[in-house]
Length: 371
Figure 1 (cartoon, rainbow, N blue to C red):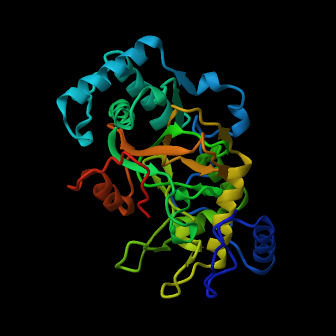
Figure 2 (cartoon, rainbow, N blue to C red):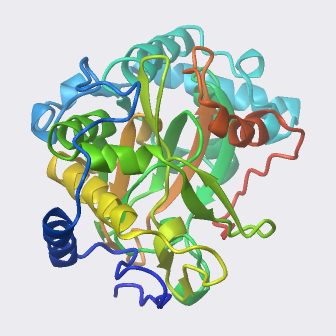
């Protein structure tokens, strides 16, 4: 059942779950009543080009182009590396290339992600691991070990355990999750378990979305590239400001989560911080619906590892239903590759905190909720 949402009356009429008619009505009203700019922000290109511009139809039915099937030899390497690491009695945070040796697969995964995720189209699925062959500890070791060849990790566990009304982030519910980005360079998911029904992962090229907006609504590119008031769910200060959209070192970068502007569940956008504008409300819906138009749906198989470029790919998820025998359970890694993109100054503090500040990494063995 969809998550009920409370609304802040000072806000535009917008909720976390988008409403297509409200978007159309708002767009029509603004086009009729406002004098909207026909110019792109300074420094932003009229159109982007290259392999990061794609539509779902380009890859539907062509899994051989974006799914890498592990060979028997590579699966044996993983198995041996798991058992070798277990004998060291080292904590999960020490699962690194030197302690998880993959002579053939390691260089292959590094090359595949550099070519297809950091560069290239922006996504890759690695298929073939059987999670049921391993204990939960071994599953974490395998995932962290393989991904150590992709980049420096930060780990999360994605299964809901609280009542929906206590949850601040939609990732921890079984409800539909709208298009957004996370923090970090590469986002990875390991499907330890899959749902009985639904739960399809959806991704879309933010570069394709940009090209459409740049050609038809440059004013919304202006809006996205200006400062927005982000609600800070973690305390003081109550909010911070930065753009959603950047163009840095010939890379388009978008970083945002819709819930920080609309609220989610019983947690509306707070009334002690500035509300978003009508232009920002329209821009949020435009990002969602254009991404939806060009999305690629991916059905996770148990054991799949998905790597996506979080700086150039939107991701979303269909609602799902679990059963006694089939329950969706994902592990998530935020990865920082060696050949990472240059970041705008406004994003650097988040990356510093995520990847480089001293802290204890938690690798939960059972489903846990962090929000």
